[in-house]
Image 1 (cartoon, rainbow, N blue to C red):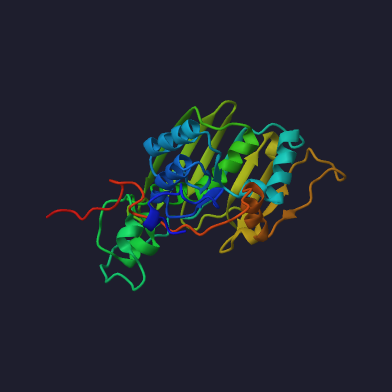
Image 2 (cartoon, helix red, strand yellow):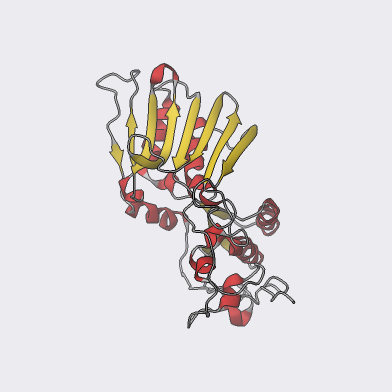
Length: 305
């Protein structure tokens, strides 16, 4: 079904749910349209570029009585489930601090205008974003541009990692946040800082986000770590230059005896894709392309001279 023709999801009686896996700037509009059409929606993280759009999505789900799930995948992976079970059990003690870390924003500086590639509807790709001439940097590095995504790695991997921190400490929002950052070597990563350090305050716990050059803990390039008194900790991390196929959790807790100490837990990337399959009760899946005409007034407009 091509909604560029119909302009709506409502004619798709064979569609039970909409799976939104577009660049971030399309997430709010497609989620709202799906709810309006009576479809449940699975939308990838980050939910939206702005808080205002997020509130509109929540209101649409409530108004039309639809199920909307935001996917961060990792809660469906055994390595995280088992590690969180250990943390929640109290076996390693009370978590008083936690950290999430990764390297710098990797989107380069600069932009080179170029002809629109054959087969690409650039105006359609831009959708609700402001019009801009085509460039490969915007197309393939959209996470570095605030018209399409805001926050760089903080709203990319940060969503995944901070979600696990929230799960572990049993909180869903901080009491306060302090953040500093800058671009100290190669300049800004498109429109985002290279380096960011953030301090989150929660009830009974503080959490840090570390986004730094060559950032690793125990040779793990990104992950989360839960710290408890007496130097004990449990970390869930992946090696440098790897992907989700190499996640591993380890405990250094002295509070676990030889019989109770957790063994390293690993997982494979295939577990990630099982997340979506297990969450969407879709009997008939249909391919639904993006549409710039699906909501009048919400498509790109060429800037006037």
